[in-house]
Length: 299
Picture 1: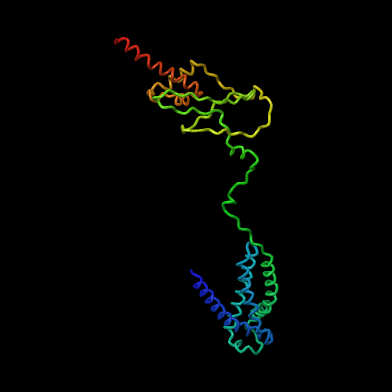
Picture 2: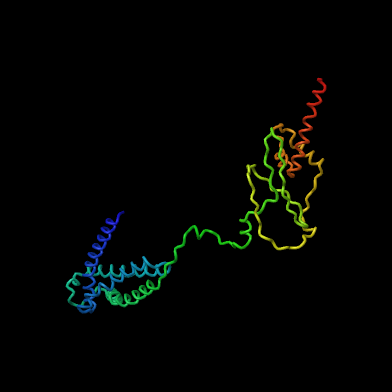
């Protein structure tokens, strides 16, 4: 809906409300004269009832929580009271003149209730209207926060989260896979020497990515925590060369010659790059022995 349509709708609403107030104003003025109000008081009486209804309606649009519930109750109560007064005015034709004092109902208890209602509305308008205005003036809307910022958890940036986000220097440079037709080029592996620290094998890469250069990353200095007792260390079984060769022979039994590379063997048996090259050479030598024997027999 564009701006002109909205303005037209608001203007139409104001016109309808104004005409409805004029109709209600006539009935409430006659009722006010009947219960003893003078000309000026009877003229202002409709503003007391219907005016507080408009004020309560505005308060419901501004307030929240319990204050909004209170404003809705005031709006509902004065709406019912205005409806009763208009109903009595339409039910008793003698009220239309508005010049003489008379009973609003033939039954005395009903008349007492109607007179109490008509005379108590101005007092209630003072009390409830002042309360609503005070609530509106002291109302502080809740600050609107971004949903994305509110959903983000607050973490300690100086704790373990900072260490987890900081990349650590790799303990060794992984060997690059060489072409099968060329001889493998040995790569010097920098070794970090840590006193009284167990040997840690390099972390396996999920897939080999060609790297042209590796920049050295200096990690932040760490506080010395002292010597780790032997009982607190994780035992690491040490495999001999024969055990590694036997395990590699079992794992690569169904491999082709093209798949028999140092990197693949290193990943399969979980060992170092140097051991992977040694195992590759040994396995290729074992596979070449039957061919050499067959050629010798043919010769």
